[in-house]
Image 1 (cartoon, each protein chain N blue to C red):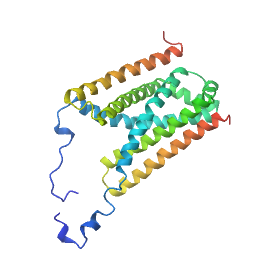
Image 2: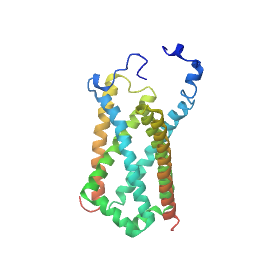
Image 3: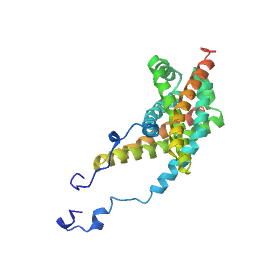
Image 4: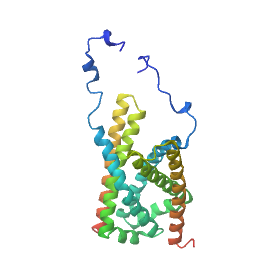
Length: 131
Length: 132
């Protein structure tokens, strides 16, 4: 508060753009919703990895071409990358306080999560459709 | 930031080690480790889509001693993050918040993740015909 008298900025002007974006509650809820969805999807993923452990390319392709497997893998990938993006965002916001660095890392997090989500979704679909 | 003169919040180093505190920190650490796991999963899935030759190359990395160590560690990270996450879903509803229940459930997540990791790897090696 000692800075108040040193410049002409009003208190409102100082906090504008720095505070809540009013979507914290949505972030919190989506972190939990994706967490709950991750429970059965992770069990499916782990059981699938065990069941096909050590198999070759042809077996994995046959596995991924099953409609139920392809859909569950797509949902798993979409869901965990969403959960991951929300989680990493919080880590960046907690530890990185330099505005430029924070903003860059938040952008990198969003782009990175969406990139690997797209790469995995495309790979699943390509195999599932027999390309 | 440094010029406000406000008192600083005490940080990690002033607290005594506690199981629930350690589990909380490790939940975040495991989550970050799983980001690396997600990149590996993307590499592996794209290898399946690329073709048999490239898939074989990736399989050789995965099956190497170092590859298996990484995958074993990621299995543990996944199980610990899963158990810790389920524990947090309970605490979100107001359960497990007494000191005893909170500490015991934190300890339990480590028992669960250790056992689950060993069960998963034993099962996987059995499927491969290496064990049992």
